[in-house]
Image 1 (cartoon, rainbow, N blue to C red):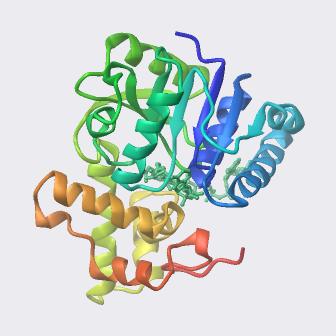
Image 2 (cartoon, helix red, strand yellow):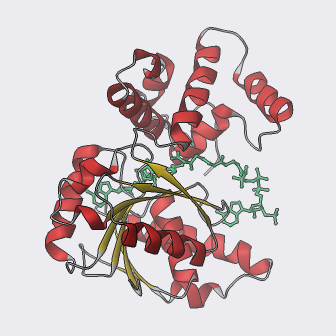
Length: 278
Ligand code: CAA
Ligand code: NAD
């Protein structure tokens, strides 16, 4: 399998970062987002990230950006990497459309944080070529790709995507198809428990994050990390865990849901547990 042209769907913080690492590996990228102006914002964020990396000897930003083109809709490519909102119905609809539009040999990958890959594969006629390719935020910096095999993902697809992750300079780790896979089965309950600690008045947000940063040597505390991920995404992931694992212990803390309902979804909205200047 060769992946010379990659269609990235979703130009938010993850899709933009994914488009950047794909283009930095020398491949052509088509970037599509349904929201007006989203691709332009994604390209601007890519430019800033590439400038930072160029100062440390990274690739020429103009060269990398020259391989990314804006698409008005889905286009044919060797590989799709879907990185839209964490909503199973929206993703399944895109997988169905991509299956109709992309050549039969193309691989359809999702950057979902938690949604079982087999449920996305079921929306296509090529479940052997559907796989999870789960990058970590910020994509240009963090080295992991969690490769998630659906029930029917072929060995050939899994091997090709694992090798591709290495070509992006990432370290792949393979997980099976459970809600939240490995990463968010561990991370999200940790974040949710930190939100409960705030909700219950165990400590204020600063103190909770200081305890995790200095006590566990984490680069960010769990509340700042939730703000980085997006509180909307955290709630969506908790709900996938709760429904998929059929256990109320994964229910999102009401404080998380209240902040999302108030539009305070973290860094991308300027406020969450903390306030951010744009
Ligand atoms: N592009 C390029 N470089 C970047 C960057 C980006 N987007 N973001 C940060 N950097 C660089 C900075 O330029 C800086 O470089 P120097 O050290 O050379 O100056 C370096 O990274 C550190 O950045 P900062 O000084 O701004 O701040 P920091 O030390 O706190 O690092 C961070 C920022 C890399 C985000 C770090 O805080 C971190 O790793 N945090 C943890 C992030 C994490 O856990 N992510 C996983 C989230 S879970 C997930 O992704 C899965 C899911 O499904 C939800
Ligand atoms: P985001 O909110 O920053 O961006 C999502 C983008 O998807 C938006 O630009 C939106 O306009 C676009 N979109 C929504 N519906 C669409 C559609 N039907 N067609 C095309 N575009 C559409 O979200 P994000 O943080 O980039 O997360 C995207 C995906 O990556 C989610 O599945 C999330 O769970 C996963 N993920 C997120 C993180 C993280 O830390 N934020 C880490 C790993 C994986």
